[in-house]
Image (tube, rainbow, N blue to C red):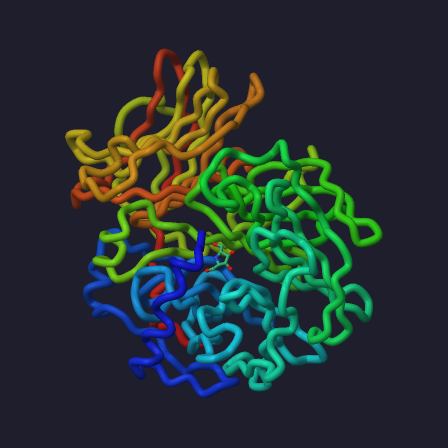
Length: 507
Ligand code: DQQ
């Protein structure tokens, strides 16, 4: 998502103007600041049970990790406003995966250092009891190391940074960023997102004994030229793979890369330090979900996080004073057909408040429950209907309305946003992709509505994230939708969700 032009300008200017004091080699100590908390709290578009900074811009999740019984989440963060420049690492901690407390910024660009123009994405590992961050400094793109000796409160950058100063010699790379590090016996391995001009995305593999001296081995995995899309930049064509995330899963290995506007996963075999993909898919059907990173949670589960981008104009984002949201935690496992099964973490059920149940009705019409902070579960028998689904955030006269639909003939699952908002600032295009139900299968939807965020899970095998910005305060209605046929709604369950009030939490 990022170009040199996007990121270059702010940090140098800001530091010169003396607005942030950054002692070399330590965390910045800059706290999260931004617009008036009361303005942000009153913003109807601002999610209430998703993790996000108190204000300003965020993008990629970085280095999620379980440490001493707590979940730590870092993320790309610009403390200076709701726009993508001068990347820092924001930091939050949770005891339950759902409620979060914000901690001081973990990493800030160091004037004159290899990350002077931004601390871009990376990962967190623990070496001999000491937490360490591997991240990308820009520009040029190099890999850096920071460690924390005080339980992740402050981070000290290695004086000898960068630890990897350039891509392997002679390679015409399209990028060199976003390290993902893991341990095998007494060695560390590091995968870097990259690509070869005109050929496709690659993940480069390095090895080290101490996280400092790294030897390049070979490609961990390579994309194919015939997979490239037409486009204007290497990330949109697939010539550059961002944010590789590589992990073992039930006897197989999975690799996630962010490219072509999506998070693409491969499941396959990892042998002799080569990864051979066998099955591919999208971790989410929408381009609103990006740069996903996962963590083992200490109980055998793999938890996945993604950046939910905005879907409205840059001007609207700046005016709001915040931009970017962390997805809800999703549990990744291997399905019987070898694909990834990605479902909402059960911990989210602790946010459920008042429950409303509707059963055995024809699948048409509106329901008495209304809201924009809800979990909705619905199961439909398709009957003869070609299109089935729900409408959410509808105004009483239907001036604003968002449809979540499964189209049997087109084998498509979509969030349709044509009428989601009367505001000209909001994106209107449909989001979604291919999805097929078996002939006798019911459609099972689990939908999380949180102000401008929608996360939908269909039949435990498709995720679809979307952004909508209804402008009317009465755009809160829920209804069912069935065209040409006799769809039966087996059951509709709705829970009013509690806000997480991250800023007030103490743990
Ligand atoms: N965002 C980061 C990069 C990464 C991109 C910069 C993906 O490290 O490649 O904020 O969204």
